[in-house]
Structure formats: structure tokens, C-alpha cells
Image (spheres, rainbow, N blue to C red):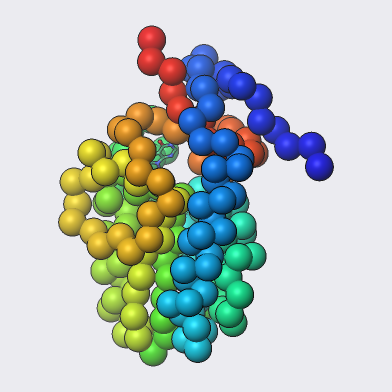
Length: 185
Ligand code: IMP
Ligand code: MG
């Protein structure tokens, strides 16, 4: 299978270099899947992915979950086409699943300021779930300003813009098989 994984990539006039390789990402996802499989055995959790960014991570993660589970998505937007958060969360698609009494695992591509995840955790908690857990592939710990519980983190990363493996810059770059970081000028 040919995957899109150049050494460097240029999007909208900005250059990005490899930060996490395909092997590193896939290895970590195997570990996370096996941990989730143990902790949610007999709980039939519902994974809820945050569109668009989390779709590739969630698709790979779920294939390493070896216990019964379900999946749903919602769509949030806080970035527009910029490299910094707009500071407002917009809901572009609702959750369809019936969450009441269920174990919910919220899945993000990246937690940056924490605004989106804080909003989402509060929203889901109001829907009377049995439990709410948070999984993120990447965490920009230095950038996080909002108080949000994160239960599973793939990788902690510096406070720089990243791209690839579901993450975009102005909607481009999601199809890269690895994670790239902005090259500083
Ligand atoms: P937060 O609400 O500030 O935590 O931002 C979360 C959302 O912003 C994520 O779900 C991403 O969609 C987007 N985001 C944050 N940092 C990056 C980045 O470095 N690259 C691409 N998207 C990002
Ligand atoms: Mg996102």
C-alpha cells in the first residue's frame, strides 16, 4: 500500500517536517487500544469522535480495541482556517447515539487550549452517561488553559502547529500518514 509520507511538506506557503513517524504512531495506538480493551471490557463503550480531525486516529484505534464497542461522531469547529483557535466552539453536527447510562469515550485528534474538550465533556455529562473518558492522540500541554480531564494521551507535543494523520491546515494535509510539525522561520 502506498502511503503519502514525504520528508517535508509545504501547505499554504508554510513548511512542515516529520515529527512522528508512521511506526511511532501505530505502535502507540496499539498500546492505547490494548489498555482501553482491558479497562472497558464488559462495558460496551461508545467511542465518540470529534470530526473532522479525529477520524483517522479513531479508525485505527478502534481496530485495536478487542472488546464490543460502538462508534458515533460529532462535529465541532474552533479553528476556522487559521493556525490559532478562534476561542469559540461551534457545533456543526450533533451526537446521534443515546448516551444515557452508557460509558462514553470522547476521542480527539489534539487538545490544544482545551476549550473544545471542556465544552464537550460538560455537554455529554448533562446527558446522564454512566461514565465519560477522554482520549486524545496529541496534547499541547503548554497551550492548555481550560481545566479538562484527559484520561489517555498518545503523545505530548510542544506548542507548535502540527499537520497530518487527520489534522489539517486550512483543510489540507489530513491524508498524510505521519504527523508533521511547522518549521520555524
Ligand atoms: P482546542 O479547543 O484549543 O483544544 O483545540 C482543539 C481543536 O483545534 C482540535 O480538535 C483541532 O481540530 C484543532 N487544532 C489544535 N491544534 C492544532 C494543530 O496544531 N494542528 C491542526 N489542528 C489543530
Ligand atoms: Mg478537532
